[in-house]
Length: 421
Image (cartoon, rainbow, N blue to C red; front, side):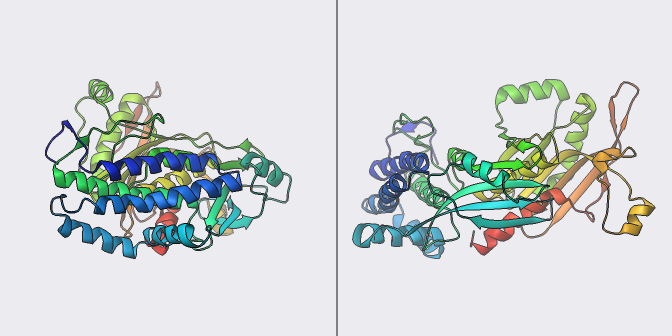
């Protein structure tokens, strides 16, 4: 785009309608536990999503180069399960009948990084997630691992998509095409006023990235618990860069060279940066960098008090991979290592976790993986000085081992492939 100044919106009718859809989406979320209200709000939202493109097409005569770039969007929509569903659903709602909604509850048992079982349970639509959790805790659920409960409304015509996720996906498609229209006019920021709901602004996305507020709202409809330890909360936060934080980092660590290539190529640079921070602070938080090609699409910090919370954090990270369309990821973290004993080798399948062993050693790891199957992992073993200070050794390539923590990410990529994302 050619200008940073605020300018009149070139496609105001379509843009306002998209902002209406954003507001309606949150109203739909708020009515999730009331079947009649949910149906009513969905019947209002879906036609409005369809109307955004109609309002845009009404201005095609004045939109620069419209005939060249808009047909590509139409072709992509024809191949999209979600956008095809929006078109058909609008016609059903306005001309035939309500969508055929089904209410279910997804129950996921995560025993460990590699063993995960999903099932569908039936509960009354007005039964809240905490009430479902209470019911499950008093049933014959597995005694170990993590249990996740997710409420789900689906349309019979779109069974693989939960409806909040489906409509959020459609919103992303429309936001992208309106961004393209603004770009055609050379408008970077338009003058449409923000709404009373804080997150409903005129901001648009140039790529298929779902809004953070929609991801957060959907996470409120799920709960996680263990049979022994009670509720497990998600511990993942967005790390936005700002000049104040960057300045403080420069003063503390010196001039850090942030890697600026693809995830695999960035591993050595991230390791160099992580070693500097580890030796300065004596620890390193777990941080994930999400990529689409060579473009960064998100940075997330994760904290976990135990193994269940760690598995949950990476499952949440996998959901962000889908919403940001990330096809590559880099994880920086501290790790424990331990060699398998002779007894454990005899037992073959048994291995006592390194985190619980007295002979464990400490390492700093940088692991990258991409959707097309590439990966790289460097490990710097950490020695502790007399006062606990960290001394990082030269990095070693452990790519051949892989990291189980990225299993949720790989499952998500497989699922996205099946759904055409």
